[in-house]
Amino acid sequence: MIEKLNVIQAMMAILGASAVAITALEGVLIGRRAGPGREPYDWRAFWTTVRINLWRVVVEAIPMGVVLGASLPFGAWMYEQRLWTVPMDTWWGWVAMFFCTEFFYYWMHRAGHRIRWYWASHQVHHSGNQYNLAAAFRQSITGKVTGGFVFFAPQCLLGFSPDAVLISYGLNLVYQFWIHTDMVPKLGWMEGVFNTPSAHRVHHAANVEYLDCNYGGTIMLFDRLFGTYVEEKDGVPIRYGLVKSQTSNNALWVLLAEWVAIGRDLLKVRNPLHAFGYLFGPPGWAPNGRGLTTEGLREKMVELTGQAAGVPPEWLIDGQPGPSAEMVAPVPTVQVRRHVGADVEDARMRA
Image 1 (cartoon, one colour):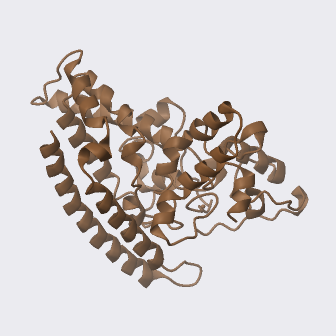
Image 2 (cartoon, rainbow, N blue to C red):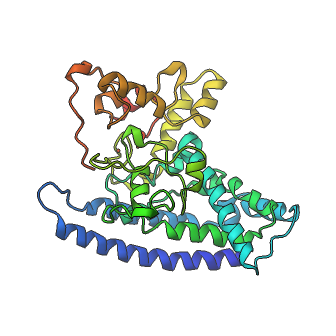
Image 3 (cartoon, rainbow, N blue to C red):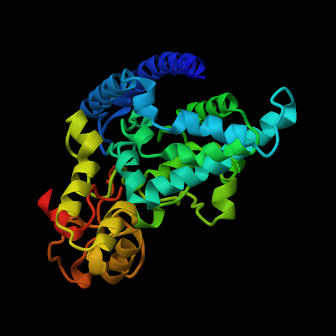
């Protein structure tokens, strides 16, 4: 199985190299259309993403048993205990695989936003302050060691071979490359059915009304079933990235910033329950309600503006005193995601 996985990784490397070239071409096109009122393409962020992927190459060079930990044997063991066998030489086997992969991807992705342990890896993908194809391959180096494989191993128990699971998951990710762009408008009837550039723009937004939604990989079926689908609103500018902007172009810092923040939070706890909250609570959680989770941010925006919408002002994220609600002006939204760090106090330290 490891040999087959290496073949898949080689194919993904070829696709990745092609994606870099296409992304650079997009940068050139965006640069040509830049003008008054439009941000120029951020080439520094592009090269940061390239360096992030060089770090990924280094990590991938570590022996597979070290990088993947228990994922491969666990998946193989689950397949040995399978309830039945799904024949992958039939059309319905691949249809079943598609929906099964989409279901488990939805929950893995949702956990990546709602559980800080997983968010520490996933925030890398949301750290870019512009929404373009480069964001598609801005990925973490720690995702494989946080145990995300547990979301897909049940597919093996349901009778899908580990090889088929890897292929299906890989194709799901390949599909998502093209939706990381703001150059494609809404696509009519496809909205709400497929994961489109518009739906994924919402997912990458820092506007509080858009946080934690549209988790689907290729389709919006499970977002609709579980109440997390949000359509892009016409006339509402989107601000991309983390709610507390990641302004560093140091690739290693972008990759590890949230893990450093978790370490700081754990060093100051005295209550084991607080340690659990910092690790497995939602991003922004802190004891005694001192943090700013998605729900907390929406409540604050209601207090400030009368509605759970808009981008939180910097002074709020940094835990600084701000103007009264009557004095709060609309926050300009050009092109942040939940801040890298758990609570207001920690966010202030990094301001």
